[in-house]
Length: 524
Image (cartoon, rainbow, N blue to C red; front, side, top):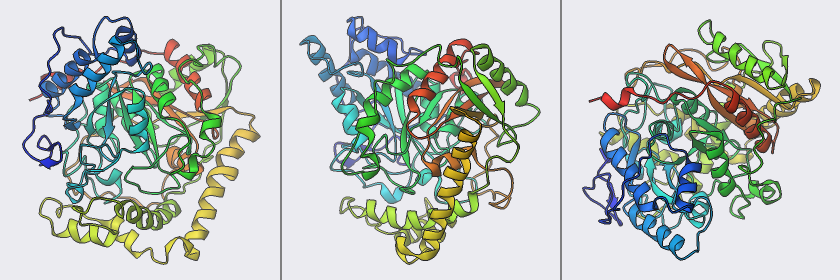
């Protein structure tokens, strides 16, 4: 596996997760369960150094990640980045609250000096010449780009069969119970936050890829409004639904990350309004935000069962105790758009992946979805898993002007937005809607296990429909079912990120506290 043997500089060579830097901080710093906000305060007060914090995270990754497969590689210059931050602070030139804070990136986000593989050996030589816009913004804020996290290969867009993790990163394991799934596609970022492998992480989300790992790993995750955070330099699935988002152990930490990530980028036209919409999300958090809020309640969606209902009901009581007015919404309020949504995604992936690969380094030999199919069917490291989604994308011909594609795009956007969430919010005079983020983690099936069930069967998807509409979703820890975490999700209209973060913050202050995992510490 490429895992733990990636690059140091520009060439693939044997490399431990500790990276290439030889600098070693003098005074240790205990990072387990320490918030990003607290580390920032300690750095500002000169109680520690970024080098000490960064080394502590590297040590935890080396100690515990072996059976988890959360981290694909630590940046070879991580300690050098930390030392540069310490010099800035010593000179009185701090770049802000994130200066010196170690952050992990999902391995579909471009970062100079490390391959961006999307979990596939097809992109083993994809060493970008420039950072993704999100990476660039983190660096401009002084953050230490600590490394890259594992993911569902191609962010889950490869096969309908079971495939936990990726060919490059291995099978991802839940730190609460290593026999259980860490969900996808931002599995590595979810595990890394649960186990204190970094102060913060970035995930990407097309239809629940931040919500799912946040739910089963007991962390906070935000899928922002589409267009608030740039997607430039991210291996795509579909421009309609893709976004990056912060993942952390608290709402405050999540808000601090979003403050840096949000903003307009000329290279991503969807973000043209972001500069006029963004704010300092951490400073505007309000513990009294739920007072007088009118919030809809959706039941019966994915994960809702006799086991999860009591935990969900208890969460609703917390919301009511904090002053929220809850409105029960009818069953079936969310339409199942999985079938037309996935059909439209095929056209988008065909187009969008070719656009991304067109700018890849010359060493990358795949340029189209047809190239990807050929690689995955012939490379022995990849050929044991099907490529159904790729094959559907290859069959989606005619480009983005194909009449069927245009018909699908009109249908799903209308039904997810104006006739879906917009109608629920406006007709019931709601500021947000809450639902169970999902059930507890399932046992990891063997790779290649067929998944059953038609795409148009079952209830609608809380996450897919929000993604199609471009709306934000915040997921926060809600409690546990048989010892495994479950989360509560809030969805709101476009640009309601600040409101949702305050709702989540108010719930977090009054609700059950997050219980960190322990099982991973004794795993072999």
